[in-house]
Image 1 (cartoon, rainbow, N blue to C red):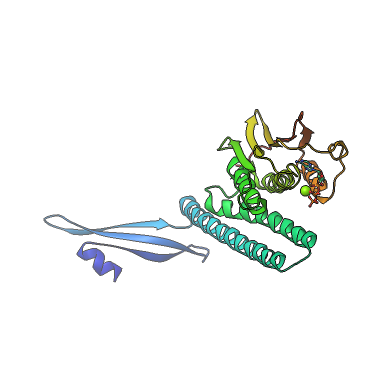
Image 2 (cartoon, rainbow, N blue to C red):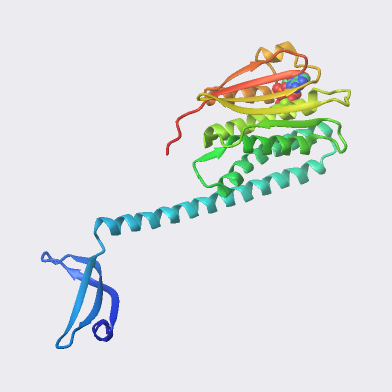
Length: 269
Ligand SMILES: Nc1ncnc2c1ncn2[C@@H]1O[C@H](COP(=O)(O)OP(=O)(O)OP(=O)(O)O)[C@@H](O)[C@H]1O
Ligand SMILES: [Mg+2]
């Protein structure tokens, strides 16, 4: 079939080559008819598809497929975490004890922070790094929105440098840290309500150190909490900082300023 099509003009198709040792290799043959006034010839080009170029093409295809699958996994993990988060929200709505309901609500926010990592990853170009400014801003907004009362006068402002890439482990830890710090500012900084209540998030990079700052102009944190006390929330913050090799410090009052400095690990390509 290939031959008669080739004789009529040109043809191309898969064939199998057999080596002297009997092993078989995939190949492709291209045939083209060449005619001059007196004679008809046929030109045949056989390409060994097991050569380095062919292997490279196969690798590229495999890599693209892997990326697609990974994106799909991130999408599903995000959807599943979102379901868990919704379940917790529904549960919180049906609990009459306010303290229990608030605790369930906090868990919902912590899970939402995790879901956001996967959401941002499957949307982004790189599957290994995350734009940390964009991510933390999304988290701060989501926590602030979920905890502020309707018509709450507390504002959230952010000064975030975009385009800073960070690895996923560090991003997840920072997401949880920002969740705790913004929750604290909303819940504790303005007990009497204030018209000028502002929470701010700042993210920037200095040399190879990422600076993340969460501040509010509220009543300030009690000194024993600065010293490392606190309940689950602040303990989580300290533990996560240790985990990613970050340092935590408190700025001058009034209000509360928490500064986290993270040494940025070299991106692994
Ligand atoms: N931004 C803030 N302004 C004023 N007080 C704060 C602030 N952040 C924390 N605090 C005080 O520090 C305490 C400890 O905070 P921590 O986050 O550890 O616990 P929590 O918020 O009470 O409970 P959770 O474990 O749910 O976070 C709070 O109860 C509050 O009194
Ligand atoms: Mg807290």
